[in-house]
Image 1 (tube, rainbow, N blue to C red):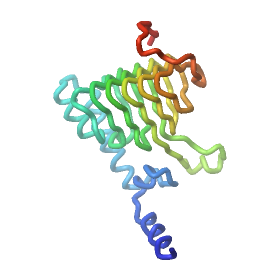
Image 2 (tube, helix red, strand yellow):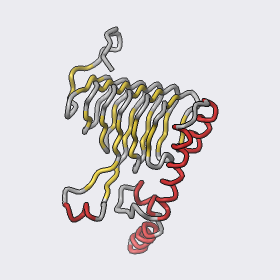
Image 3 (cartoon, rainbow, N blue to C red):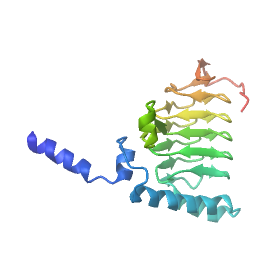
Length: 205
């Protein structure tokens, strides 16, 4: 048991600051291992947001993100911090001016629609002002499952999973998990009603 504990601590000590960030541990946001990835993402985003050639944009997104299907579309301008922590499935559409603070993994499934000006925040800060002076940051994952529709100007905070086929109404702030087949809205977002798969109604984006 003692060997196992020592080995675990040793592995933790050998983690890069980027790996610590992804593991939800305390990390140095100004470390070289993080700045290199952040700067690479910044360079790629500048090229993406100024490019109108779809084939070139697709190639740049492949370089930026951890995984993105060729059948998905991300409109410009698009903003993120690291890129390689983001995974996007098939036939997903992300509208203009979406921002992802991806200090933890962001996983977006297939056939997802994300409206303009939506913001995904994996990062948060301590309530203690002394910790904030050091820019201490805590990160947690965000997961958006298949066939979700997120309206415009929505904020999704760290640790949230949005279940398959759910809809988030415009201007909502999502702080807690959303079960599948749910219509959520408001600040903070709450259940409005469950969605019947056979219904034909439309919600405003």
